[in-house]
Structure formats: structure tokens, C-alpha cells
Image (cartoon, rainbow, N blue to C red; front, side):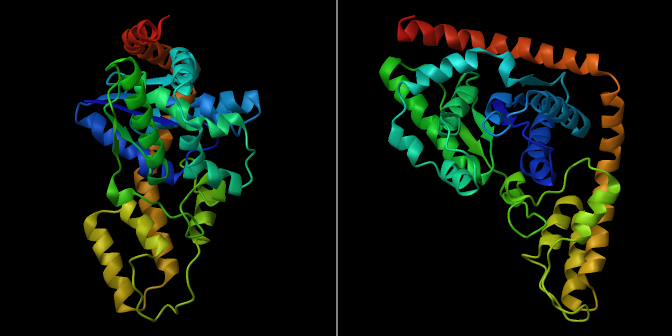
Length: 320
């Protein structure tokens, strides 16, 4: 099965990115699936207006993925901008995209509500996302719940193109691991850079400790029993800890005499147990920028090889 996922280099990756998308991709990689992972630097331009910052963030995303488990020998990682066929396909799809379809997209409305400029790039984001997916004829796309509608737009556009020009595109399916559908941030909302409530994967240890200890909780006294389900600390702990550890924390909360401070310390310990080896690997990778660039260039070559036969069919179908 051909699986594709992408991530914007619009800021530092955080716990929500790892458990919401990255980990599921690494799990699929371990099963031997055909994986494509692109760094969506074109998409990031809707919010990032600094070229040097975009280049640095793109490099950081590549380092983060490699450090956390992406194997370039088994998966294809590439920069979106290194596959120009994506932009070409986006134009062909744009010529078939109804305005009303884009006007109904929740993500666009949400981003405007959070202060982003109403640009054409932001409005047409789902069309470019569709091109990213369809150019590789991806069959499965790991997405968060907030991106599920965009996947439905992709399917609609693929069907419109197929109806107009013949059966060319595969209609992709969404893959949403229900156990990690929503990752709570430090304020209890969904963890998102837009809400400024994230905990970065590799920020310094003091900063991570400060953020964990500042996670918003209610005012239930330490000695009182507490219901763990729905508690942000407990929900985050479930992502890092073993089932036995999770069960022990739940029992401690319900028994009383176990405070949020205790739970935050346990969460911090679980984070370090998982991510300290990743951090060490990332530091080693960062020392060799030439090898990192070689990995990205090789990924682009392999991605373009996969895109070429699809684009050949598309061009002939539209009359070019």
C-alpha cells in the first residue's frame, strides 16, 4: 500500500505532531508499507514570510523525523519544492475546483478567526494538498481530524478529474488513529502552534519542565479523589507511558492523595525516557549537514520518479 504524509515547516515540531502523525507513520514504516513523507514548504509560505527562517525550519523538520525514527532506506522523504510537478498538477486541479467547495472548508475559516490573512494561498490550500497526494497516487493518508475535510476535498477533485478525463487518479482514504485523535495542549485545548500551547519535541529540558509543570488543571485538592479521564496530564501520560503505568496513575487519581504535581512529574519522566535517545540521535545528525542534504536530494529523485508516470498520463489527458 502506498502511504503519503506531509508536515509544514512553519515552526518547531511538538508533542502533538509526534503522536498525531509521526508515530503512526513510523509504525506503518515498521510494517513494510511504501511511505512518502514530504516537508510542505510551499504550504508553510501561507504563514512564514522569512526565507532564512523557512530554510532553517525545513532542515529542522528533516532532522526531527530522522531522529525520531524515519528510515530513508525504507521511506522517501523530500521537500515539496523539490518536486515541481506538484505545482503543475495543482493548476490542472484548480481548473476543476468549484469555489463553493473551498468556501466550505472549516480550516480556512478557523485560520481567519485566529488572525491569518485571507490570501489566495490559504484559500487554495486544499487544492495544493490534493496535488501532493494525487501526484503520488497515494492510497492512504494519515491525517488529523482537522485535515479530514481536506482529504475529502482531495477525493472530490480526483473524482472530478477522472470523470472529465478518464480514470487516472486513485481515490485516497484517510487514516486517523482514534487513540491519538486529539492531543491536549498546555491550556487543555488541542495542541497547536496556532493556540501557542505546544511543548516542542526538542526544546531545552528546563523549558519543557516549565511547560509541563504549568499545564492547566482544576482546583481539586490533592487529597480528594479525581477522575483521570479527560484530565490533560493523564491524557498526555497515556501517550508516553506503558499500560501498567497508565493504570497505576488512574488508580492513584481515583484513590485520592495524589496531586496534579505528582502526575506532572511522572509525565516529565516518561517524556525523557522516550525522547532522550531521540535527542542524542538528532544532535549527531545535525553535525553532518551534507549527509542530511544528500538524504533530501535522494528523496526528491525518488519522489519525482514516482510522479513522472502520473504526470505523463495527466498531461496527455488534458491535451498538453
